[in-house]
Length: 486
Image (cartoon, one colour):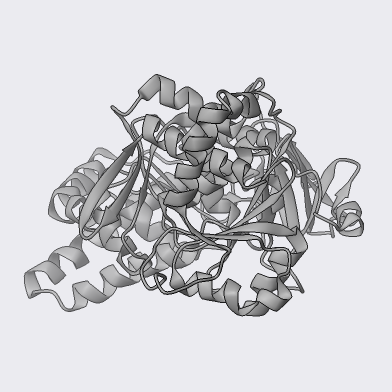
């Protein structure tokens, strides 16, 4: 009989009274400016931001917001590309017990207006002129918006709307506020508790208007640290942030995991240069949806067809060897010495250079989620020596509930539950397929202003995903779904 319930074997991680701003302060004291917390590429040059500077920018911005009346339970909307200023704004709002929320910058105006109205956002951080114009064009629909803080002044010098302020002006206001109210920021951070709301994460809204998931500091940190317990991240690691920050998948890496572990987050110059910038950084940790992995694999296949005859010959000789080694790995069969020797030769001829050109030469943790990844692409990366793992989760469970373990990877399942997480299948049919239901300390505390949807989604402490899946009996219990979404 097929299994219908499984939970993690590993113990969970105790987060104590940790909150995201408290971890930022800890890292600033621990690492100072000797270690880069953030790195951004501007005009072709990577510029590092140390942990102490990261903390100072957040503090100044938070005090500037406080001086303008931002306080507990207020919402701060952020819209723009992935930039250090996004993280400054998010942590600043959290430091004041506020509720940050991200808005997808490619959202149409009606979607932007809905999210800002729904969250009752009085403050908006908009990256540039394009994003500022969106807010100004909807002024009649957004009567609650009192301040629009921009981070890139280009094209905005002639604007005279009294609500506009540059982020530097807000930070200067914060420094003046600190002189009159010494210790205000530290007291504000100290009063935070793990069960305070840290983020309003809006769902995609594919079946109507998006719903705002309320995630606490404990939700995000439990997920981040329990994930790191089975898929380790290290303080010396490099990560490239190129997926939209409103997405919970990027939040769990660039914010909660980065603060909990202390690794460096790198921001590409532009979204269009992300793959080239990935190559320059050579990250140790990569998380991306299937479309990114598919794009990488497709680019290799296309380029090899235009290569010289010798390179095409090497590719056609080495790839079958790599695929066979990947199959050994999936089937948990030890390769013979002959196959090991052939793969070592293929590594020297092809795979070492190929990993480097893809920007994956240093990768240790590679994962994909958000949709199902085809087995051909999965096999391709394992053939190249990239131990790609599938994950599964939802926004409502802070990102991830399941991931493959090292040495136990296949392209059918989405892995085992992370620590402190349970997964069961409700109402399975004769083949064992039913609704995927899960629970963990990372489970959100409900939808903003939508008690009915909350009650329909959380039943007796279990998250009802609406996804179909099944659990296999092959060795350790695997959670496999018809899709893999976050």
